[in-house]
Length: 279
Image 1: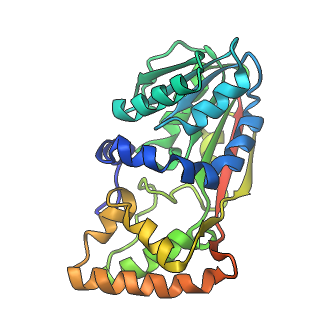
Image 2 (image 1 turned 135 degrees about the vertical axis):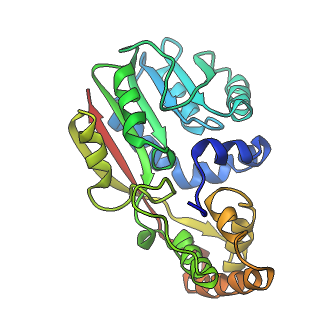
């Protein structure tokens, strides 16, 4: 597990300021997929929604706007500093229907059957035990309520990360994560997300894909953005290289990124999976 981090370690190592600064970029990448997740979860006016591993609250705020003043959204995360950013964002929008609470996804300190829907964006694959986390989400949702999550698809369908991993692992002779290890693409293989939903007893399980293209002014701009990720899977993997190999890695990554340059700058395809199940 040398090149992976648990969600707790990853999120606590990242600063809230860094996450806050990237909110607009993440909204551009994940906004449409998040709307689809909310649709599939049945989030609507008056709903009570739990956002697990909410981070700085982008999906929390999107849900809060949907449920309206008579609804309620609880943002749960292991990082208090992240949740502080989410709470401040809610205050700025005058969203009085949002609450934040420090909580571990695998041991939710919440009453059973207390939410109409549970959502979780770009986090389930990072949990040490995704099935345990989903079991907790299923426990707190009401009968016939839905749990919907977003995870990354495969590395092949996400070349922005795929190129990075291929080059850095080759230069550092770093093996890929073992099956079952938590990492960014742990649930991307065909059938993996459906299996974990069915394993914990969800009904009407379905998984669909959604595009998440990444756009920058140039390949060099894409590399500069990637270099900002000094922690998390990318940063921890890069730290395993010698300094000279790091320089070579960035040069090779930029060279491969150039194939995604066009008249409108850099645009690489990407894909997430949205899984949903009914209690």
